[in-house]
Image (cartoon, rainbow, N blue to C red; front, side, top):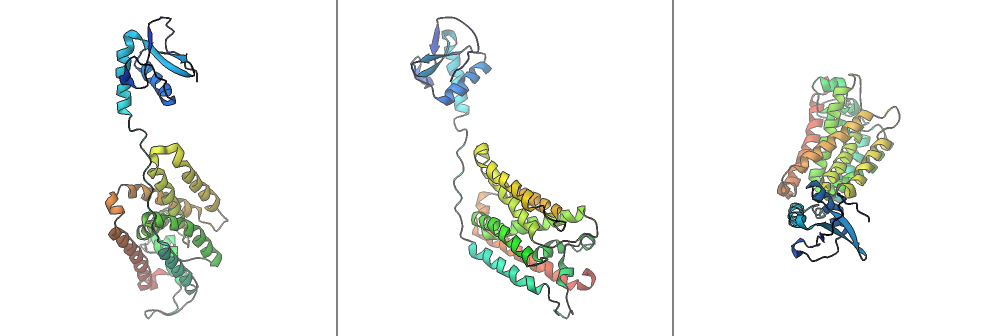
Length: 319
């Protein structure tokens, strides 16, 4: 390492700055961090300095008449930066919530064939579930907001369903183990629902869509931003990988054939990212509370059941 002095002053009365600033005139080798940052501090305070080889190490020298001022400025710098960068947060204890995710996916698998059967329920004849619950923009704008949620439980075919369950399973399992199953599913459902709401505002009134992919990409946004915010104290080392991976997945999987609702995928991702930001503002004792996890899980279930209940009782005007 070869440092350039800030002032080309050829005088014999230069003294070395010790690694331990309180050591006075004792000369000790400086570490790499000190050699990198201390000259910048001195230069900013207009204190002359130069570097000099001392055996296998480098010394930082200042004029004798600037020595005390240099020590004062460097001490002040070290005091202000003694806890920087902060240590990375402690690893989040992962929760065993696989069973919850499995049961949710089993429910989706069982509901899929039923959604293609037209049968009577609550006195209503031959219910067309796809027409009743799809994210039909015209009907959503007319006030049938529940469609933004019911559409997440419907799929155009087995491959569509299995694709969402495969990608969604990987993302949601990780979210559930990190946040708790109730919180994770509530946030994912909220991201999917909000994504469909925004999509309905942007699309033409004839646009229709079904599928959990909006929620799946919401889970992707949640996971990416949660990692970004959690490891913001070590930005260049920790968050680029998960965030870049999320954007890569969004680009690869979020854009498909002409039947793919690209806008819904992107909006789901954005809503998930926004919810992740808001979630970090919640006090830690609330986020980690078992009661909060149970409440969020219950709210997620109520939202789905209530949305389908409203779809059914408004069946005559919903189709």
